[in-house]
Amino acid sequence: MKEREPPLSAQVIVSESVGRRREVLRVLRASPDPMSIVAIADVLGVHPNTVRFHLDSLVGDGQVEQVEPGRKGPGRPPLMFAAVRQMDRGGTRHYRLLAEILTAAFAAERDPRAKALAAGRAWGRKLESLPTDATNAEDAIDHLVDVLDDLGFAPERRAAGGEQQVGLRHCPFLEVAENRTNVICPVHLGLMQGAMESWGAPVAVDRLDEFVEPDLCLAHLKLVAK
Image 1 (cartoon, rainbow, N blue to C red):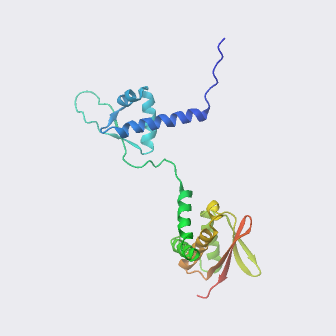
Image 2 (image 1 turned 180 degrees about the vertical axis):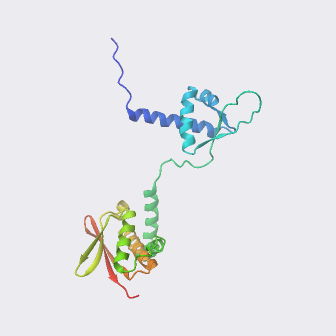
Image 3 (image 1 turned 45 degrees about the vertical axis):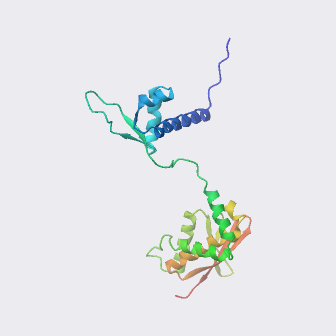
């Protein structure tokens, strides 16, 4: 008695589906003219329903568009499709590589810390403004904590020796920061300073102590005269 083959895993099925979808897109990209479902199926040697299924996904993703058929005459014309001429927005991203390239360039500068601090300040000035009902240092610190939380720093308000502090429990750029603290950490400090400056807050971020604990960086705040 012939043994039954084990069912395909979900991962294999998904992989095959993605591969077939890429083939449909490849055929459309290679064609100078729009193609019908049947024409695509003939090229790939598959059933038209298979092509129709993948076209629905590609149209939904914005990679393929349905176009008006060129033929005019009696009878219902077939649906025609063409590839959207653009880079694949669903492709692989390597933002960490980009971050490493940029931080390496900063690190090679004569004064990388100062340049990174300035870059962070410039970006911090573009962050969301202080709410109109925020009128004092406490409000500004609370808003800074909210902004840092949105950026993924897992911040927490602290106080020690009469000093206001903000602890950062998570670094969104940890892998890069571990090798380039002289660039990434000044960017973080500058970001907080730029935000406070643009808000006209009566409080400033004085310094950022890096990795005071394995899971903590500590920003020190001070009141400023306005």
